[in-house]
Length: 384
Image 1 (cartoon, rainbow, N blue to C red):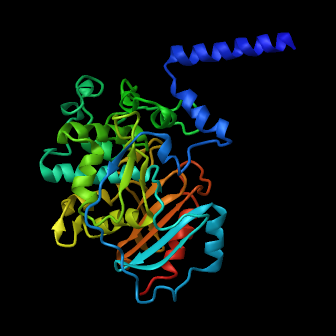
Image 2 (image 1 turned 90 degrees about the vertical axis):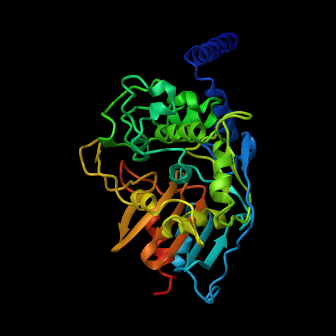
Image 3 (image 1 turned 180 degrees about the vertical axis):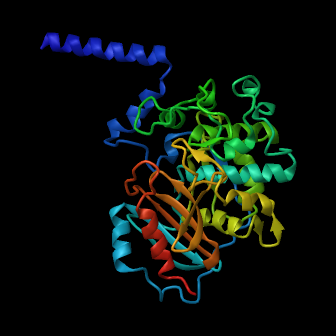
């Protein structure tokens, strides 16, 4: 028994030394918040586990209910399937009115939960705001103008547009199943900006689309430098207070008074997440105010003219928004790793929000199968 204890102690000491010497101190928090809680990854209800910055709202504009609210129901089999993925909220809005909403497991219309990577799409919209405000002069500016560490080769040719299209050419080691991958370091670490420094170059900027959170975090750094404001403060001023948010939102930080984790971790309600969809379907206009130039929104919602790492045409991504066609209908959407979705179908004036703990499995570049279930659920209820 004593030998076993000594052996375990040596292993533990070796592990601790490795973590300390390799600069991977984030592993301690990762393990504490996952394995030691009986989980294998992050959750949607971790707002209080991290420092946050509040995104203030101003004049709430509650969504009106459709004249047929309560009389339309989703297909039973699709709703039942949604519950197998631990859905917490489904919200269907057409013509700016709520057609249908339902909540599960104690969640309701006032519950805030983690956006995960839907926040990438919101960050992309803030770049559009900064462009309109003149803080950013052009999407083709080199990012070194805002992030000094990127003024020298091999980083000096990367532009803001490249980041929007996920084509920086940098390798951030984006492995979601690794304790030492970029997502774990960014989510659980205490210096998110440091995670994007000194990444090796894989491709020429602007040539290959490869989805990675590091590109979005660089956009956040640019926003902070260009505007002179914290990202959450700018988000509140330029969007949240302007689009009638009913409740405050929250952005997780890497540490107290630190940096927003802009590639994830925006906490809001289903009702308020839907507002981003309405804003984009109206080409950046809210009521009578043009918050983002329509041309920027139009560019964001079409496929970036790039190849994938396999040499195939990009068929999925625009400027921080996902793009697809479903049954002949153009769809753009925000997406998070646990099945967070904001689907927008302009031809039907339809917005579908789904929040929850889990999504369907996917292989490689394939889309998670539940995407089609939620689209069909919403389309099956909409008018016209």
